[in-house]
Amino acid sequence: LELETLGKIVRVDTSLSAAHVAHKSGADDLVFAFRHLHLHEVAYSLLSFHGRAQLHLDLGKFFRDTGVSDVTLLAWHFSRSSDPSLAFDYVEHAARSSMRKNCLLEASHWVHEGLR
Image (cartoon, rainbow, N blue to C red; front, top):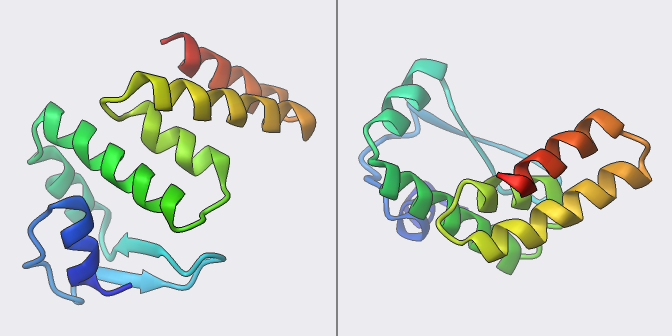
């Protein structure tokens, strides 16, 4: 996944170069990270609340549609999106998955997110 492609998906300015954003190989080969935490914080803080919610919705849908199976990643993005029904569905899945793994603190977190 190219940086330009990511920019089209999430509608962000892709003027950031590879010097700022690094591609890291993950299980689904869709992992991007800012090279410096401060760059991430500044870029995120420049988005409006609505812009952040839309970004999380776009990313969640992209990950879902490309077959990413990590329900906690999907729940995290959808819980910060502007679509409460999608958020609730994935938060519930994440809570149940955590409970099956006997990760009760994590399950508690997702239940709390679902009630938010």
